[in-house]
Length: 299
Image 1: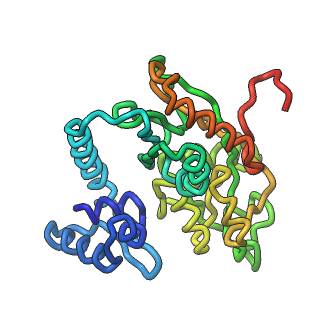
Image 2 (image 1 turned 180 degrees about the vertical axis):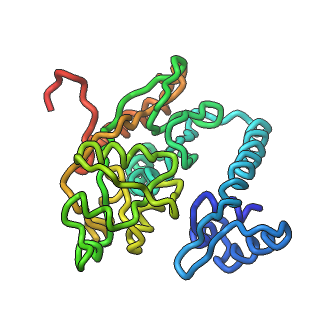
Image 3 (image 1 turned 90 degrees about the vertical axis):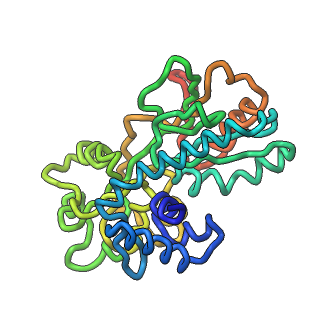
């Protein structure tokens, strides 16, 4: 069960193996044993990746909820944590592509602090029962929570360089009709927002491959399986490395902004205030981001 949960959450047997401290083969064997025991196939396997089947997508949320309940009860049994332990909720792709590479600076500045990351594939609900603060999109704000806008979410398509060549080369937005459009199934609106801004009509999203995170959509795009919609700065490194290209200069603002969130009663706790101020400075120093600024303030 642990191998299935990790592989489903991370979208990769290799990443699951790294997290669990076992081999990729061991993860594969454990998942296969579960499938054989239940008589259900949870993953479609090929040489490069393992994707959840429809049954896998149905089964995973129940397993994830069970693991969350175990973690909740385990936390309840532990002694109260001190003010030097900080648990941050962060969207999986934000953690992997932006936050983790910078955390060494926070650790250097505050060596007495212990940071825990609680990653999620869903980026809009703040889980105040299990974390101290979060970096989320905050679609539905709660009056019990404190929010601080961090940076704008700018949408843009990305694809493998090979899709820019040949008879079906992508040169104009209309050329997207010739290719599979990859998307995050919890954020189908992303493509529609970009289509509207680009003046494109009649394009449909792929009905064969939908994923639950931007990083999986990008990886599928790297492999040439279609064009993915991404939010900066998720694809910055892949574009620098030449694994992905941005076929159009059009950047379209998302309907929501990335926010720092915490319980209003806790916002002035030193550990939370430290992380919030450090986070804002990191964003201001990143040229790939467009920090939030209040109206009327100079840029």
